[in-house]
Length: 297
Image (cartoon, rainbow, N blue to C red):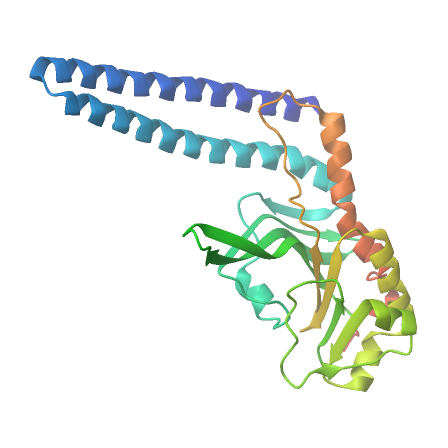
């Protein structure tokens, strides 16, 4: 990590700290003025109103400040690390994968609430990909009237250009993966000759021959290797010439405590470990090999 980025991040911390103090002072001034006015007019409700206004002003401004600071901080910090591994990097901390993209696969249950952030679009070994953190929840009210949330998916969603042409869609779902949706459009369960694979995964396809064209013995071996290496439950969706991978691991990647002094070595080490999900999927699945290159017309 270069000194220029270090200096920029430290300046952001100083600016945010000064802005926070400024908003505290403005809030105090609003309260003092309302207190003086209340005493002058002998109306205690003015003090209460001033206090409420001061709190609301401070909360709103601090919330905006934190969001802007956090996004700027993460962009400057993580973009430098991503560029060590990837090409043509686009990174938006406050944006994610659109829910329609995931739900349109027909392979994931829809929830009441959908959140996604830390969107990355880039290339690795000439393979284009998109990824983001995704949280899908169902909302319900318990017997005491409290609103509760049940996670349907919590982890990362990856989308890779899958350059081996295929006509029909295929789902490979680890049996421990919760809340996957059994695909529609004339899907049926397909048994693979690999008995060990069948114990770990459910496979649904539209056409047996096309399913086996995608799930070759080599691909089956690679998926098993991915499953052993990556912690979490896996869902593979081969659809529209793309490979969607859902990793259900309850993790929120690329987060950092921006209030603490910057420790680049630890942040860099942790971030490189987290982006290994992407590199491992491309490397182990061999998505960059000639077998998967687009056929020239």
